Length: 427
Image (cartoon, rainbow, N blue to C red; front, side, top):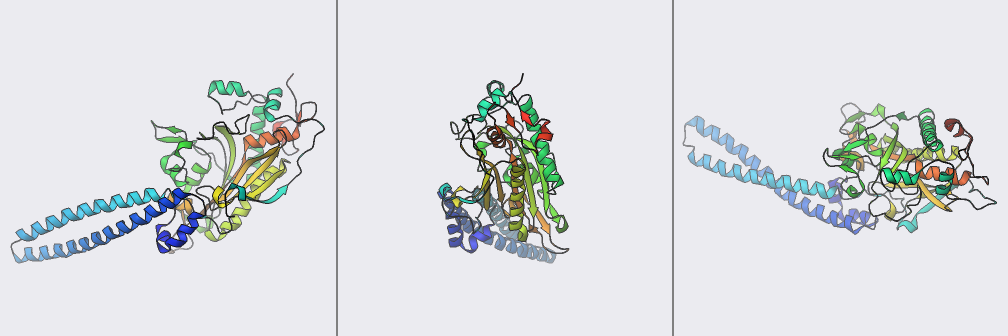
């Protein structure tokens, strides 16, 4: 959440910063926040004046009572003032609640180095690896997966609906192997602490990381319990320290979690829905870091490198893109996407997003740290990255590793976790 004082201090600068996102709705929310802020401050001034008058009147009441004077007129006056103050305090609470609701709809300010423009302005930063060449026509993963007995998409649809894949046999072992491989890499070499978070989150947690209220339509909600299926492990893991003041010595906090994720993907029906490209349930290893504000930029580079290390060990060609202002997520100040090459669909597919949120999420979730004893607490900076998401990683592994005989060769780093060096059709 943006600090309203920052909006109030230089409205022109704030408006220009929000305009970079190419989102007229954000600007409308900004205007409404400032309008409500003016009204709230006017009422607050009157409330504070009346409270001071009440305190003075109470002292006068005590003095007159002690002197034995008639208190009838003063009591009537105090009663009217109390009723008026109560009304104003209620107005103040309403203005504060309205202002907060509009503040929650304003996206984060972008880092100054984020490219201007929409998705067409995303900047390629680097590439790693070389896309494979074949002396045969490569197959898409949905054909390979069926022939190799790795997943059964029709039966997954029968059980839950479209977008809920069913992995079977060696496909299920591949998922398990990928999870163990990534968790071992991040805990043993990158210094993360593994956590197993709840798969359900409450409204406060979803609001803390920015999923609510902006993305309510994309979440699966359990209305009876007022809980949500997690859309990403970012939500529960970031909120582990919600409402806390951390010791500076704890920072940076680095946590990793492997979980299923659930997204309704509202508005995306019919778009890239073949096979595993876009699904409603998928597995992901998520990286979350909490740090001091001055370490935020270096931490973003580090968490991005940790996600890249996964793809490098898996020998998957990828490219890193700096997202432009109009394509950067609501809560993010800067995002770098990692897109893997998939030979069967002949294109780049996003497998990871590494983002820094500055203090945007920390303000919403109340995550602070104290730099030294007696010093006023500050908000931490939060970061996360997919380290990495499974569906498109699996797509790249199958499509890039396929052989002319229909088998798929697994990368050397992954083979021990799956138990085989090559996936072959079941006999």
